[in-house]
Image (cartoon, rainbow, N blue to C red):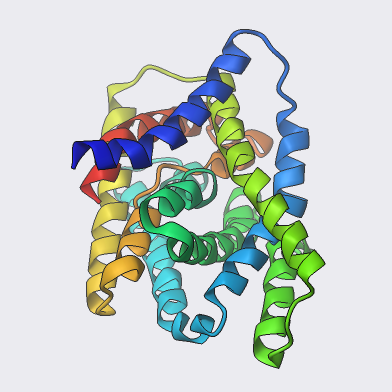
Length: 286
């Protein structure tokens, strides 16, 4: 059992650790460039191949899509209440506490743990989460939301392309499938290296309070994942992926928003670092 868990978790944390060490040793890592490649090209390819892997089963994943929406909304509502009760800075803490690193960590973990179908469902969760990040989270952080913000969610184009082929029952050209699969395969290790590099650059603060808040964030995600999967009657891969994705650490994207709009970036950075470390213990529990 322990060996199986190590086989699943080790590749994710080891590749992220390579990115972490690379930056700590002073080597150049073009995080902005890699992130743009991932978000604008890699992520749409990942979403496209993930949905094409589901194929006709995509229609059967309707319940999973609905459960994902409810889980994310619940994360946001409870995070808001938590921040209000403990009088924490709302704009920073709502965004960070509700967010999950469902892309950089969640997708590869679900791939190693649950295979191609698990990765495909993880990609669905990630795509929905990204829509929330570029709309609701952006609005909370910035206080303003434009209609063009959705155009920044490049994964929508991957979703639209996959939906066209699946719903029209048209077979995707082999050159297109080969290209997107190749790019999707590159994207996952790049995500992990970027995660490690980003963690190495975060400015942390030493606070016992942050450990408690980070622990609450992970406990909240795990509880919501178990609760929603039970309410929907999920078993097997659907249940495991929903719980895993809900239990992920604070997303790196929340730090980017906090830094850009000066929403307590050091607090958010500390939560990302602590929740990522704690997830080495909590992920096996999922």
